[in-house]
Image (cartoon, rainbow, N blue to C red; front, side, top):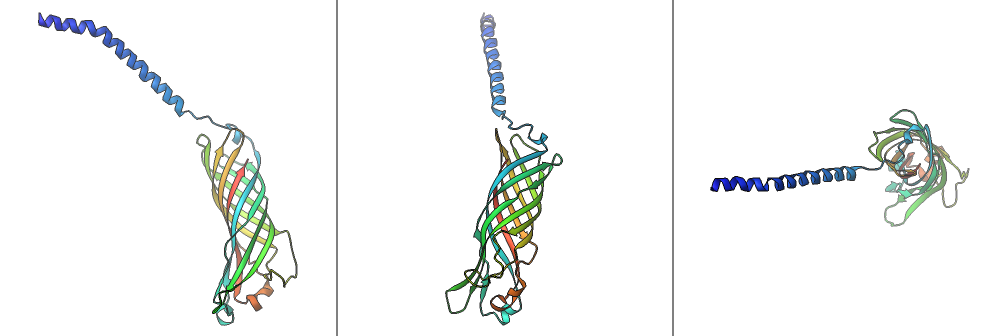
Length: 248
């Protein structure tokens, strides 16, 4: 009799157990669908790379200085015991023109106008006063760059960039040897540039913060400046680190 009651017990609740198992399966299925929906991210500007040309604008904060190479006169003739170029922050604004070459390579031009100053400071023994030779100027920068971009992941993509840039000083003051700025430098500069950036796609535009480094290739010190007050300097090269904010 006891065994019969046990089998009856299992038989009476079998339908309820099947119902509960069915409900659990439905719940698990719904949770799986909800998770897959939550993982879905809307892809913005899906056809962005199908266009050959893209245009935009940029803002940048350059930190720039001179890289100084000393002459033999720095030890034998120059009375200053410390000669260096401090970093100075400027401002840059410009345009972006990007040509899509292949799936991963672009040709990029970012003509811009830069406002900044570079200086050389002289410190002498037995005095706390430093003499500063400041060169403030406005430059037109014409970079020609090649960009290698990674595979796009949803709305994000990394890239590296490199090339050369021609700089032309806009506010030229020829022959000025007196006044606030007695440091004479050339009015043109050629530099190599490279950097890394992150592209973030939004619904209507692409935003790309970028860190770029620039190293001058030519000596920008005027030849007549290697004697007299700047006899300790043999060569001046520009060096700039810039944070770019690109909008396309």
